[in-house]
Length: 137
Image (cartoon, rainbow, N blue to C red; front, side, top):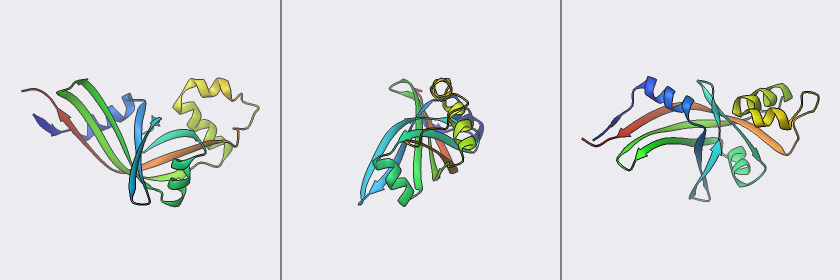
C-alpha cells in the first residue's frame, strides 16, 4: 500500500532526518547529491565546499530536496520539496546555521574566529512539500 503523509508527518520526518539529497539540473542533465542538513520549519541548512552544486545553485537557485526513511524494502517514508537556494553571507547567520547542522562545527570554528571563506553555508527555503509512505498490507 502506498499513501500520502500528512503535513505533521512531513514536518516530523524533516526534523528527524539528518541526511537529504539536493537535485539540480546542469545542461539538461539531472544530478542529485547527498548532504547533511538541519531543518528549522521553513528551510534546510547545509554547509559545503565550493564545487559544482554550489556553482549551479548560484546560477539556478530553484532546486529539489528529498529525504527518506526506510525500515524495510516495503516499509518506507519519503518527502520531496521544491525550494530556493539562498547563500548565507553574514557571519552571524553562518555561525547559527552551522550550530544547527551539528556540534562538530562548533568545535571546528571557535567563537573568536570567522567562518572560513571556503565553507559555503546556505539554506534552501522549502516552498512546496509532499510526502509518501509505503507499507505492506
